[in-house]
Image 1 (cartoon, rainbow, N blue to C red):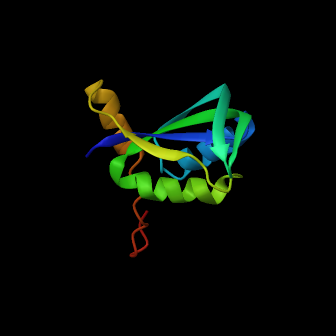
Image 2: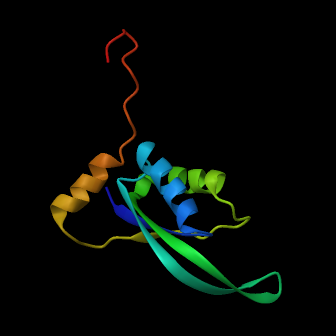
Image 3: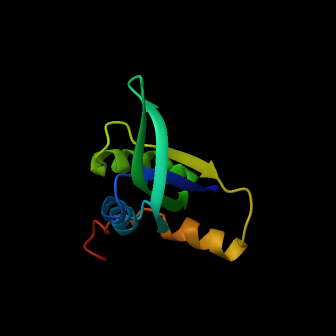
Length: 115
């Protein structure tokens, strides 16, 4: 199973932390990095804008990216947030296996009452 970095920009470090914590708690990502102090220059509605932002990088399985993206959109303050997947082509095999394992959905409780 392929692993991806989900690159997300947010309006603040606090927003990145709130979204990142939800992604890890909900097993949509194995871990996140928050990089405060980003400065973005972009075109929006015909004007060039500039804003202070924070970058959130979430590590997850490629098959979880659609769910992760939907959850980020639910939690995000932006009308059109930047959420993109960057495929990881190689790396520490043990670390990539850890990402694959930690971003698996939780199994449903046993209907017979176990677990």
